[in-house]
Length: 296
Ligand code: GUN
Image 1 (tube, protein in one colour):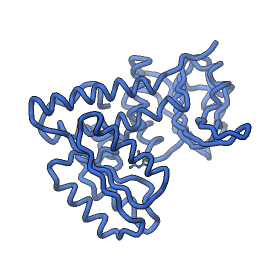
Image 2 (cartoon, helix red, strand yellow; image 1 turned 180 degrees about the vertical axis):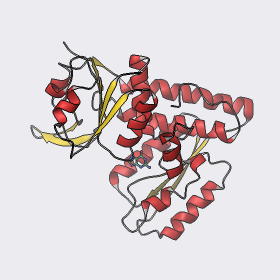
Image 3 (cartoon, helix red, strand yellow; image 1 turned 90 degrees about the horizontal axis):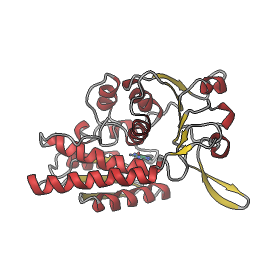
Image 4 (tube, helix red, strand yellow; image 1 turned 135 degrees about the horizontal axis):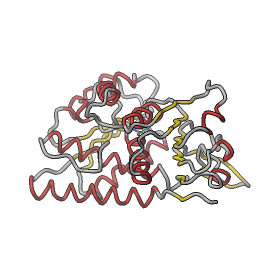
């Protein structure tokens, strides 16, 4: 049997529509326009593409987009001064410092200098701690997008066995916290995990976030499991450039009950959730009710 395809592109479009609706209401009823500031240091081509896309979608949702593009040799002091200025600007509700930063800049120091209430990436140590203790926080965008798709597909996730492959601070760890928050039994697997195939075979939900092209073959997937593929890997095959996930899609669709494709699965959800987090941050900053269905 072939798995149901979870269409992240379509799902992201519905999230963006909801965001745009909330933005319109914030403007009409409260005279507030949410603002998202993105800081890009240097000229990493992938980061430039992301930042352009973020800016475009922010404006399309009716929000203000503020961009700071800084030279690769910007000093830590100058970068921290810009973050401080954004922290104190009431028109800015969300701040994102694009990663990776050039090597001479301390990423942890910079991220932790962002006002946690404006940290729409959910990377600040305060937000990490709040999420880990089940308190209201800003939630990292990619795991939030995965959670939204899982909830939409299953309704309740309570009692399900979930395996997250990958232990990054951006995806693996927060994903595990979110699944635990929804009462899954969660395993975090990684490069040192013993007998990874058997660990994956037990899972009702598999979230693959390792960044290794097609490393999870279909015969690791339990019959009927839901597979969320976070990987976006560029490979060359038959002389052509191709995007593939961390899961071997062709064989996994024969076993899974549902699966996200690459491209068109998790990818589009990340920016949609960034917009959702910006609206959430704006509502919290103004003491207004948070948008329903757009937070964890
Ligand atoms: N670089 C790649 N993905 C991300 C992301 O989600 N947030 C930030 N700040 N940088 C990134």
